[in-house]
Length: 58
Image (spheres, rainbow, N blue to C red):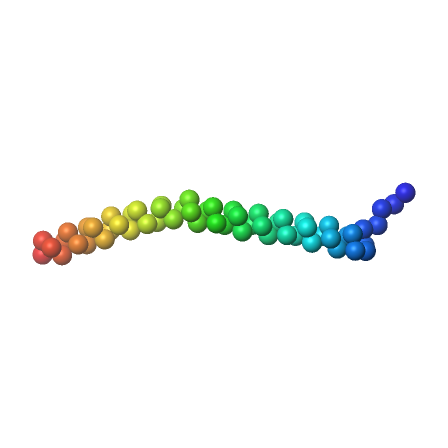
């Protein structure tokens, strides 16, 4: 017995699958942004502090 999901049920299954995929993709991108941002922000503050210190001395 062969199952054919080519009708409305197949469209629903495909839509749910793609929705879950894009939800997961969005979620991982949000998490990466939250987790990785400090790795760029913190060294930038060090550079800004060094520049401000150099300008105040010179």
